[in-house]
Length: 623
Image (tube, rainbow, N blue to C red; front, side, top):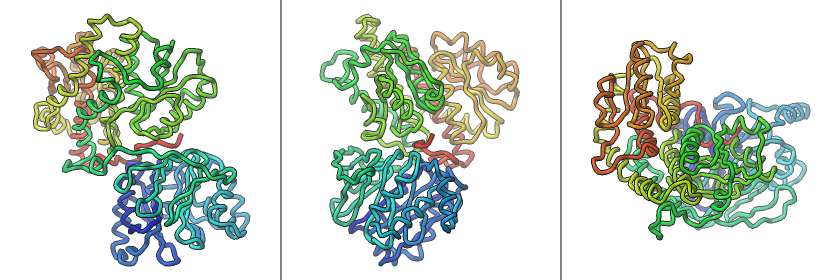
């Protein structure tokens, strides 16, 4: 989950590295560091904490470092070893300097052998050990490229490394074997390499997504890709990235997360345009692409995901079963692959991952393919590992999401599954033409409805802000809902835990009386998601149960639901339309921004780092 960036060429490497690491801090920010070639020597500057600590350290030596045109950098999410300066990357072993992402599984055996040969590792990390392997191979007379290849063949595990050496100044070598790496030619001459494309888009839109087992060597003259196994040169396709550097900046917003919350209407519009064939004018006609026939012929769908994507999958199950009339399982990827599941013919495994690099989800899909099961993916990142390895892929078009807590990618994942459900219902005859048309019309209007509802100065935003302020200091939160609101309750609790560090639980409202209600007292807040849907009356009954035990009630319901409002201590209204009633199945798309903003405003009041919550990273590339 760490972030890697490297550069060799004619540009100021210190600027490329620092700017690139800022783009990658969502991948981890326990520590950071850069290594720059100055003359024939490599200077390493690193620190525990965030990248700004490294920037402060180099302030006094920028003039010296400004001449460097070759270097590597790293921002860390700690696995082996505490998040200290000693364990920060880059690691130096003699004339070899490296950065690493992933896990070396046989590191204990390697450490024992290295120590026995007289080496003295200084850090607690598995990463540093690889430097000694390269050092030994170069001492035998091998080139940097051959030494990296020989050293990498001695390690086990899913990881990637990028290496420099003072004995071959101006050369950078990277290997991908699990954790993602992206390379690109510098139009001005040279090479970029990074954990993903975000640090590269301000220099070039043409990138190469490396595959497992690829070794890339770069210098001022460009880059060359070869096979880790045998050294043969490999040609990899170039992918054009349509994101702009401007879309990855805050553009005046105080936090990326807030910007991305308010970008959700646009993300929905872009995803609709990307998934649907809008030229026909007919409801639920999907753009022609690989995978449609697979979904149409499926007898069962297994949605596999982690975190917020898992919550999105739970909602997908409701829609796909109700409208598409197909059996759907929802699985936690981290558990599914170890359970020895029964996968029947006709099942399609769908991996949902915003980054397309989630290790547990990828592992499930790879195992499914070995069993001959068709796989599909929903992801936000073109060229990601999951998009290349799945039999078919359906892209959300949310644009870059920098805040660690998922917001617009979550809503976009919901939309893809909603579209699938309507399309399957139509093609399988489960939805009659009138119902298909009415559902589609409401779906198309959703982005506009959401944009009106989510104005920063609107009623919803103001009431969320005042509610968060009134509840500051509360002991804990329960989020409850039924039916379509239940997965949103889970997501609301997760958001509050992620960015505000407040204990929160999400429950199906009917489950409170089966144990959790013992926790309810006057120091607890209960967020009741009770829109005017089929479950509204039952949810209100559960509200009464917690109200009787003294909980502070935050009600989220229909804007004209005055009887529900009277039962609540705090009231957040959902939009009211005099022209069009929102189908109850679409209400989660309106509920999700409410719980996102509640978590954001609470975190803001607590003074936490909203975009970079402690101990977390956005792209989870380790199991």
